Length: 164
Image (cartoon, rainbow, N blue to C red; front, side, top):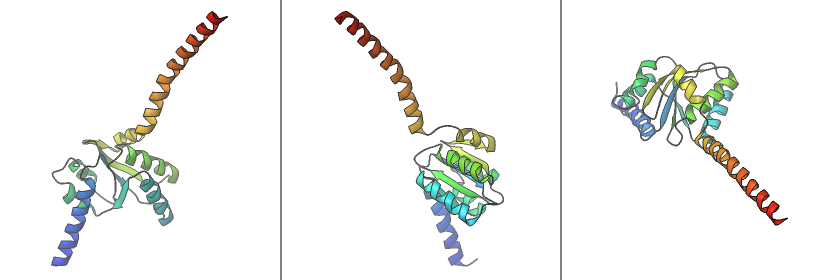
């Protein structure tokens, strides 16, 4: 192998390592069966969710994840593989890819690592069902707002009754 080829491979390994450095999650999928248009639409949707999606050679991914918290992914790196990574939202890659897989009725999860824990195909499907942090906060705020609103209305009704 030429020096240039080795340098090119090392550059890709370094790129993968950089993407995974500080990442909250990484999900590996089998992307076969999608058209170029579908792939472009998928990349756009993932970018909007701050998820980095790239297709790499399995051997280069294996070298990049060796000795890291993502090392467990090595066991599923066979065949066509794409890597989706998020540094912002731990559930975003699984959640966004699940929606895309459902829309296209193609592709499938292989596995993933979320906040340092390895999940198989079924585990990643479960992670995908968890709402985003913002949605969870909104639901929580809504749930605590309801009793407060009731209390305010009750106090107001008492005040109105006494004023009469």
